Image (cartoon, rainbow, N blue to C red; front, side, top):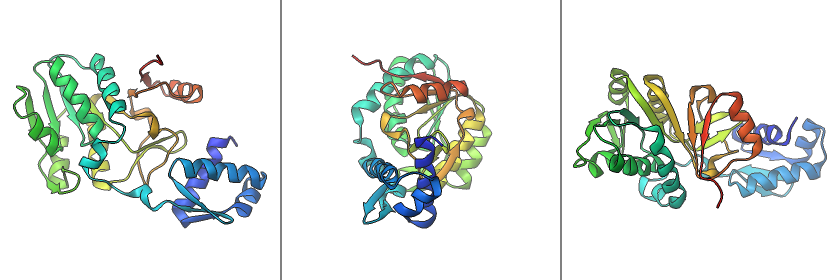
Length: 256
């Protein structure tokens, strides 16, 4: 078993039991306790676990769903680099579906500046209010508005998404894992993203470098459902080879 596979099993144990013990894991994987401690060190640095005496506990913040305002400021420069990289995938006259992620918002800001005659279907109140005078056609999913997430969710939003077939779906997620696929923290939002993927001819996932090698609470999609991943920097060679197997096109900003 490779190191990343072992760590993801450990993450699943953390979600299931909320804690793990070094000695038990060493026996389970037939490796040294020092190897397990290094695994837990990495998970601690990634914010997924908190080390304690003899093991680790699940980081309680892993499944939090922060407000849009707080999300927007995290890794903002990376999101802006991603926004530039998305432009080559969008054509004048395209129909788009987008989620409420702050990364998608930054992408739309650039897309609407550069492209014409777009139709945008979204459950994001921020997108609807920010771009209402953009000259592009905006369609709201409707639904129940979440006060913290600034997003519409629920049965009405789901029904609206299912009404339309679009050229492109653009959305983000909280985590990417080679064994766990795409995952997120908000169940209602995740349901909408799954439908957006189903209704789109081309699916673009926007994720900055911090989302790789992580797992969140809710399984979203597998990699065979994604056409493009746009990120802010080159992933590891292991990730590049992995995505090639699923025929996912990877777009990123080359190192300067």
